[in-house]
Structure formats: structure tokens, C-alpha cells
Image (cartoon, rainbow, N blue to C red; front, side, top):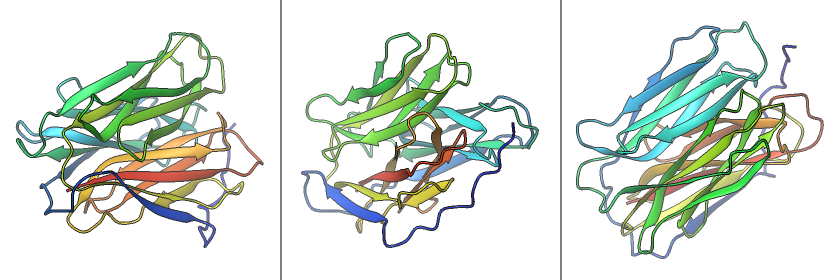
Length: 282
């Protein structure tokens, strides 16, 4: 049945914001990252896929996506880069049938050719079964740091919710978690890390919303330090465990902040929160 979700949560002094610095050198000028975006058709079709590519031979260092007007009935089950780190693809599928028009945004944060050294895609895929997938982690090789990350669920029949795409404070790995809320059958969850030689300035900034039963909740990170830009975007939902999902991973157009949104899939009376993360590089 179609649900009416509560209005956007009012975030007060209860929300927390932090900047966690990775062990790198002092800041320098921006490396010239830029954002490209694309939006799918707006209608009630289930499902929708949207892809966006970097210019020329430039490569993806960060990925993001957003479900527009889905009201919690639509899951963002994939936000991932292709093997060459050139294109980001986002998939939205209906968990609850809806006749309300909705659309999908895809975002790629791109690095000009030569701006980032040793960029590579690292992936880890879960076991293929019908269980929750918790903390599926992609680890960067020694000497490299995480600039961004992504995830993809396969064969879940719109019955599995992404609960987090999370970066560590040391920027050494990316983890994703998916919870079963229906009858998916066997499915897999893949986590992606976009890894490269560290830049002189790298930091993880994050902010956590108030914890209450309101839905949806959106949170925006603190701004990147001077001279750096947003690369990766993450989100962590705490307290929903399958009753909601990540609906937005948004690198803002100026690449100075990032936004994350969580939405309930089914009515949920218990308090929960969303933490937004961004990887700042420069």
C-alpha cells in the first residue's frame, strides 16, 4: 500500500559534524575535479537505469545517485562504476508498487587525465545467498587511499535495502551493508573502492542527523577544507536495519559538500539517524 511519509526531519543542535584528517601532507590547490550528472525520464515505470560518463579519457574518482519523488517506495540498488572507471550507473527499482512518477539521477566526480596517479578499481563481492550482507569491504592496496566508492546489488528482486556505503577515517577501505526486508532469494552485494596514490590533502568530513522516527532524513557534510574538493560520498543509516534505505548520495555541484538521505520503506516507529560522509581531496 502506498505510504505517506513524514516531512523532512528538522535537524537541530542534536546533529553532529566532524572532519577527520587522513595522515597526508598540507593542503595545496584543487586538482580540478568536476561533476557530471544525468537524470532519467520522470514516469511511473519500474525500473530505471541512468548512466553518466566523464569527458574524454578522464576517470571517475567518486560516484553518487539520487531517487527523485520515490517517497521511499523506490530503492537505489546500484551506484557503481564500470571496470575502466569512466562511467557511473545508478539503478532504481520499486520495493512497493507505485503509480507516482519518479526518476533517477546519476552523478560522477571526474579527475582530469593525469591529475590522480595510480587510479584503480578494487571490488569485493559477497556470498550468493538470501542472507543480510553486512560490512562487505573493498580494501585499497598498500600505499593507496580511497577517493570514492560504489555498490551494486544483483538478483535481489527489489527486496533488499542498502543501509550504508561507508568510508573509514584513514581512507583505506569502503564498506557496504544491505538488509533483507522481503523474500529476495539468493543475491549478491558488491562493494567498490576507487583507489589511487594519496594527494597532499585528504580528509573525511561527516555529519550525523538527529535520531528520531521522522522520515525522510537528509544530512549535509561540513565543507571540504580550503583547496580541496569532494570526491567520494557515503551514507550510514543507524537503527533501520532493513526498514529503510539510502535514497541519496549527492556530491553538490560546487564539489564542496555532500548530502545523504535515508527513507523508510515500511512504517517504522523507532528512532534512527543518517550520517553523511564525503572524501575531500586536493
